[in-house]
Image (cartoon, rainbow, N blue to C red; front, side):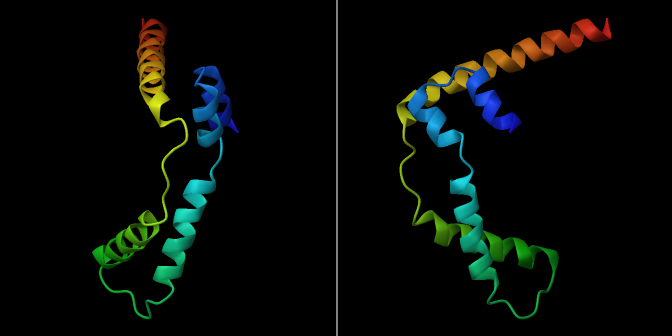
Length: 96
């Protein structure tokens, strides 16, 4: 819920806000990763898991679509940079 409120607080443009306010994209990608990893019968070393998850994400990538409101991403980046710089200043004041 906090992430959704952050999108509003940053005043992200409406079309991009609709895309970012939902976790459907992430859930869909990890659902495909689960399907791919379900085929593994015996897990080996730690990087073995990472390779299978990476393979699953590459399979999921084929189904990705263009982010609606992608032209407004520079506005989001500017808002994020401003929010981070203000937060840093606020934290410095608390320390002093």
